[in-house]
Length: 415
Ligand code: GLU
Image 1 (spheres, helix red, strand yellow):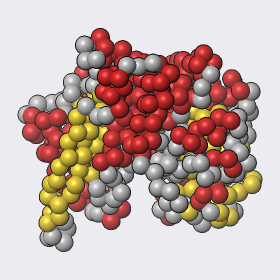
Image 2: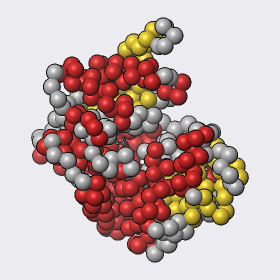
Image 3: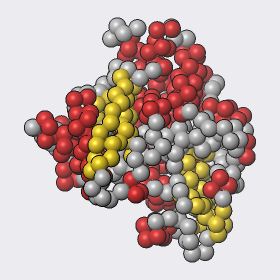
């Protein structure tokens, strides 16, 4: 099986958009590479007493439209190229939502599933000691990503404030409510995605109460299961998967029971009444709506032609490769691309930064309403670009966002 370099995928997406926009060489070169990359190592003492050196990254891809913004992952397979790709996607994500932010990403190569709370706190605080001078409410603002969470952000914010000797809660987002977090951030990625599915169903005439499959059942996948039903009033979840396995039930599974089972047992496997299927088979099931909510490069030229979903709502970052985009487009599958579908998280992160700056917090209902407005507008802007340029949805979304970033670079006199 071919292995994909996510940064090459991200660069190809920029090249395709640049071609349609007729960008000059300097602009293209600027947008094809991160503006700043920082690679470092730092020590953390493990519970065993052993000292371990960790490799880490913070990459600021582009900050023409505002301070760089993007999460931090703790993952054993993290590489400089995955962080570059994810930082690139954050740039296009904030631009397609028209947020006054740039894009960045960070990562630490570690295996959080095998670490204690105390060790994770050491990893979080050590990371901030390494990058503190690059961060700031007006420079670069982290958030959680794969295997990091609000507790990680609380430690990181505390370490940053200890170094800088002042309160600056807006330097991290998706913090716990008690230390400057916002209502509505925890489920924002999934909620934003479900709003785009609602719009897509209207445009395409697809019934939102049909069959649903969810690949990945972490924070985002679980919330998508709950919110699809809550916001759209129905839908039958026939399959879900996680790193432990995949399960299927033709009668559909109750999202709340699934979440309870996962929390209790650590995996979706063994859910009463469901049968086990292969993880890769989940993507090929006959469903109306598929939510890829795991990692990069899940839908490739090897399986794209077998996909039967009418709508794919990409809640993961980078789940589909460029060849697969073309196959899906030709087969009439409507892809809501990651930089749009999963942008609810960073949108509510932006709301959190605004609230932290004013020390004045909004009710949950206001967060939901403003998120809905932003997502709905961005969805229809991309729809318009699909019609106007006659290209597949990811390319249309890239055209919208690359044009916005290119314009900011030009106005600043960078190109
Ligand atoms: N990690 C999330 C993402 O990939 C959120 C980033 C943020 O809020 O800065 O969109």
